[in-house]
Length: 142
Image 1 (spheres, rainbow, N blue to C red):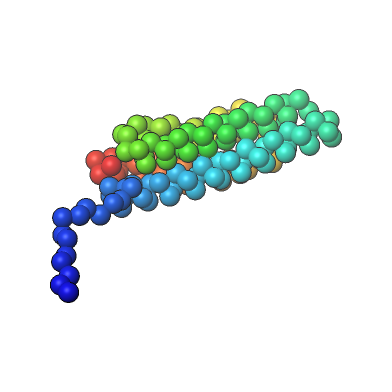
Image 2: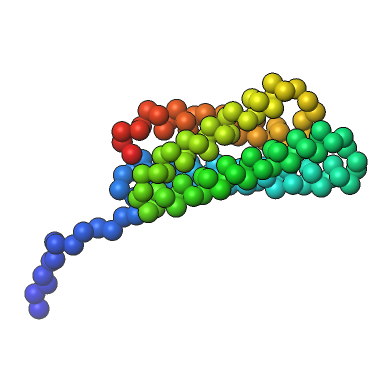
C-alpha cells in the first residue's frame, strides 16, 4: 500500500503573527487583573458603607471600581477583535491602557482620601505603560 502525501493543505492558526499571540496574552492578563481590581473596589465600597467611612472615600472607591471594570471590558473586547482579525483591537487596546495610566494620575493629583483598591490600580498602571510603549513601537507589525 502506497502512502500519498497531500501538501496542499494550509495550517490553521487563529493568530497571523506571533506578535498578535503575545498581544492577546497581555490583553487577557491586564483585563483579568483589572477585573480583580474591580472586585476589590466593590468589596471596599461595601466595607466603606458598613463601617461608615467618609463619603469621599466611598465615592473614590466607586470611581476606581468603574474605571477598572471599563478597562477590563475593553481589554476583553480587544481580545475578541484580535481573534476576529479586525484592526480595531489596536485602538481599543490603546484606549484601555491610557485609561489605566491617566486615571490613577488624576486621582493622585486631586489628593483626596484614597481607598485600598487605588494601590492596585497604581500597580496596574506600570504594565499598562509598558504595553502602551510596546503597542506604539510595534504598530506596523500588527
